[in-house]
Image (cartoon, rainbow, N blue to C red; front, side, top):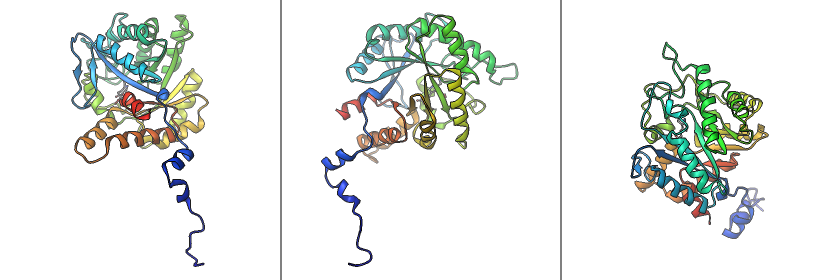
Length: 326
Ligand code: PBG
């Protein structure tokens, strides 16, 4: 026998579809997929988002229908984002009990609240005319503690509307503690918090800005994390857990799989990942050009995010992926 004769033959376990299925270590299930949905105030037809082909800003009626479809697809939940008609410096519509997101929460909870977990974005950037996730100090910087007061109010109006999980996504220090306290004081002991724990200042959010009509000039680097840093995510995790996060999230997903793995190894609570708008758009664009196989790429990215440790995945392909998985 020559020295280079293979002693071990891993190819045996890759040889047939049945063999590969038997030994697959990672499986995707529709129940762990969450569909982000946009609802826009004052429109009578859904508005396409040009940078996210296939994704729209819903009317209240089409949002209901989309939520029903999500439930029928066996998804785990939906994450709602409101697009208000009016933006101002402090994001007033975010705390208006009849603001578009609060109306949408009521609609969706009454439609599918028994079969889906209904989640809502808890952040000000959809509502502010300057596009930042918080309110501004006199010098133009984002004022952490003044913003916390706004988040506390937002949490209560969203919980009043019946949401199951609020998703504080603004990366203000202390946001989970403030939201938990506000919810408890308002009697919303059972409303949970999905904390955006490791959230990076990412170019991959580009198409989302169009999706929510955000007019941000500048960037979010003074509050979202630096892509160069992994370790501080563990500190954010510790802090969010201490402040009462029920679930934690890493965002974006694909460029941060190392961070996701570290958080998954350290977290005693469920870990989610958000496959964000830019991740969606770049695959759609490449597929539209015939450069990659769309369906294979979608399933490969979701499998990789799952493999890296996410137990829930927010993805704009949730309904379609659920169909592929059946
Ligand atoms: C903040 C928020 C953002 C996203 C989700 N929540 C934008 C941001 O932080 O800049 C991005 C989601 C995506 O890109 O798909 N409200």
